Image (cartoon, rainbow, N blue to C red; front, side, top):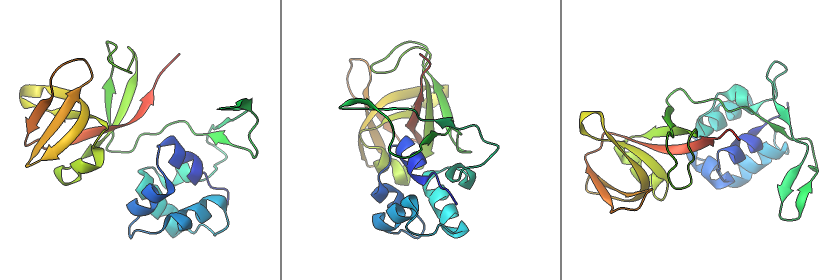
Length: 186
């Protein structure tokens, strides 16, 4: 069976160690690497564990005849564009069931008008996983704060706004959503 574990992992910006730690029960980065390269057989059980760790459906990790993947013709690296050493395909993004969307209407920092951000909600116990990442935080009366999470302590999150300004502190946030994917039309 041809798997797309490596492509999906890299698209999500995760390392082998990240995926291994997210597996239930946790495994080793070496095992994930072997499953990616095909030196270890991928069972349905492994496929489901890795899919859960990557927050994607298991079908995203295998090549399916009815899915429209995009073949990669070139890889832009430090030496310029080169042909891939082996066939590589891009998978169109598919949101996880609990993802939330954020639309950028006005340019802010690295985000441009028209950008779409897909964010993963996190419970308070997991806020530390989002340090130095851009997050959305709910506030009272349907308002939000958005910026870089710089610290969490004693039920408070500290956010550095994307535009110049002072640090914001939100107490007792019921959840935060960490940006996982940027979709930008050119």
